[in-house]
Length: 205
Image (cartoon, rainbow, N blue to C red; front, side, top):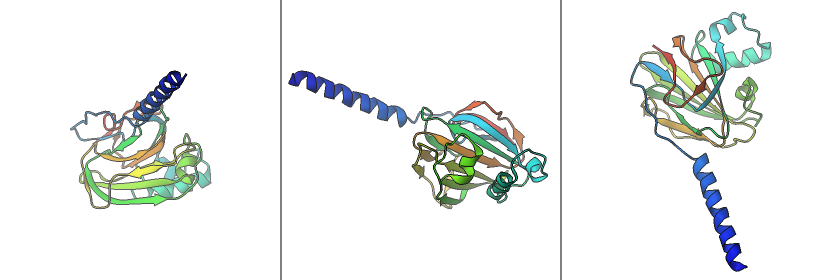
């Protein structure tokens, strides 16, 4: 009887180890050396907003939500793009720098823990904002937003740190949403596209 209990306990232990390793996996990535912006997260693109059209009220977005989006983006660009990437619990949780550059700021904001598959999560949920200055395209912003399950946001970098494209910058445990705000350059990303952090080209310059 004791032998079966020990076997069962060992099986449970192995299962927990496998679970931990899967949800904390961090595969190596091949970073493109070309002049481009790579995805900051694994997941699926669920929203692309043309900020120029938003500014000119040519997009059908609720006024209150539009105002919040303008607030989140105006320190980066008025006519670029907001790209939202939804991460499921099965995606790799590590985020990577979309471009090389210098960290202008990191700022953590408290908030709610709503489902992360909509723009409401960007506006209302707890989040961490990272602004990076790139020598050629200017400022970009990466927003790590918490979700219904994902309640722990980690930021690996600090102000004035120099980053390489594809460098690890943070982690959101158990998925959530990562938003990228960039100036108006040649956009590659499409809504519905599956992306990989550090590898998938979001835009080119």
